[in-house]
Image (cartoon, rainbow, N blue to C red):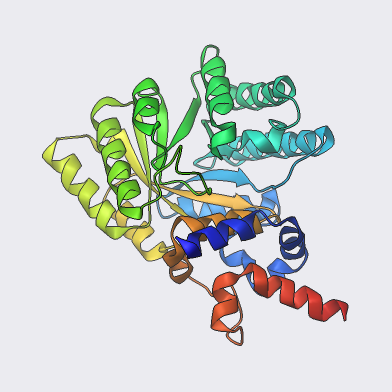
Length: 324
């Protein structure tokens, strides 16, 4: 838990985030980011599609504090929707309400989300609402529900570390849902703190939605959980078109291709842009072992082992040396 908390603290550090944005690609951040622009990202999606792997695309961005930034993010996502349609790739959108103005003005954020969902619906492209920390949770769910009154291409995420997750998954069982463990530091009043409790709830949520839900995206790199799901769907005669496995871009790529070859629906979470740092730190917070699953080294071989794990400290060290 100490290591997890450390990565979360790094993800929330704006100085490190800015430094990583400036220097990160030189350090090998492209191992976990599909591209810095839409063209590069579409090329990465096409490569994955060639292996019968679909994608969900995330326009990376942290610490949005102005309407100008939120509008720019909206315009970028609209461009991604257009690019998915024009290139006829197998992909959909993942977005974070906070990037689109949730912390600035709820109505402004909703208007941005409506515009994205409306355009995606016209092209029959699904839009998944990523869930963030507990303070943003209910408002985000409320907007998903409101948009679903008009559109049928909206889904969201259930995080297994929240006590309320079982109630939420029952409420949203008629939605396409991604089940995850959760990647933010949450207090004991609202979230499980023990890994075993989180894992057990994760499996319960997956099983519930497989049996009762619309479509289930199972987001995990854990081969034990994947094996459990395989047995569960076989034992309960759950059709393969009712679920998919999801992993992050650049992680366990051999397993990704193998699961797709076995006939399972497989989707890769494809982040793009230069604002990669907070995203990557939260992935390490979810599961520190993820660092060992990246197919290419994110950092140079000369990097000290401790700094390689800390990641943000390494970026800060590089920045400090440069400024001397």
